[in-house]
Length: 519
Image 1 (spheres, rainbow, N blue to C red):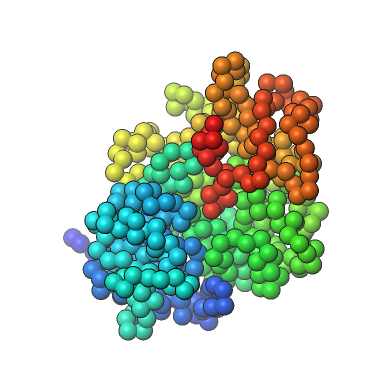
Image 2 (image 1 turned 45 degrees about the vertical axis):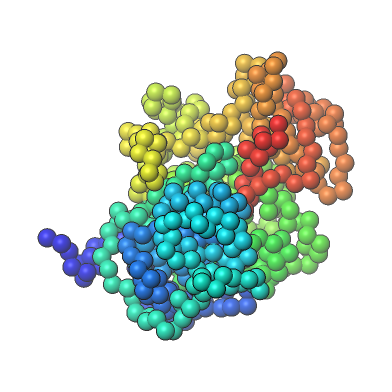
């Protein structure tokens, strides 16, 4: 017998309901600041509900896909929460993608609604006629850019002409919540389906894992199309706290907002922590409010942590490992354990079971390198329209990550490399991340990315792409000579390529496929 709405509300675990609970507990707390706009929990939720009503009036219903192409803004969050509440499936798109790549995602996802930031509309207009499933286009007005007359102004869909009552519909934990396309740093993006139940488990665990307490204030610059940004914003909303949202990460603005709002929590890739001290006047900003700083990236160079411990000795630092496919729920290394052992990505998070498998899917003993596999409620339900790839990735009830790692005797996990980033050179297997961590210790190096390039002699020649620190000067001979003194001979790069800026995606992840394209 079908459950009634009342019965469904009592037994389901869906994210939209948790926002409602936060509003009930903290109606007058600030939930969001974006630029010069501030919202309380009550105001935010009312706008979300009006948006849900507005989208429903367009015929968008449970299970429909709805895409968005935008930088971070308040409307992005209104849209995502409204879709969660009506059971539609949001499809975020990386705003750095070009027309063909955007088309591939919108077409593949079968999105019926497409919301686009005004300055990004020209890219969409190139492929608009190919988006056959899209019934309505909407725009977010953030600048004075021209917008098509026949597109819907999203602000109108959030206006008071729509009711602010909570949407009433039956949702199950297994229903899809988001269709999130992987960043495609090495290959074509895959559509990852994350369920309401998976989102809920992330929401519930995030405050504990990130050491977030009532009253904490987080600055978020990570792009909202990224799973990490979702994870971080959920954690703040779960605690009734304030999220300060940046349009895009800007080093000076990061320092200004931290100083002004007394930010307690940062979460940045290693590249941001490397560059912040180079901002003119850095020493004049008050960063004493900072309590917890998350550092993300494949590996945190020990020299980076030492530098920041000198800058802000009272901060608790944390680092972890995760993927889009696991809802950012992987491992965490925090506080004194992280400072003592920054090479480790920590231990499995709450509700996560993680093992190291060999080529035959057999569990490997402590100390041996193999593929990281895990299972939890947060793991994706699959890749959209890719049954074979889903079956292969989730075989045996474990999510096979494609990442290499190992455990130590104390149960700490060490990320070794992506399977595809292992370099086979002269009969040896070399982890690119290992070479990168050592090169970063060089006093003149700001950023480094290491890849293997085809070579007749070595099979693959270890090649290091390097950005030097401001005003630093160094040549290939100096770097290679230093490397020979600090790493095994077979790991020493055969070639050094200097760059003004190593290509990255908006999340700060280095795009090694772009480096390979230059070969």
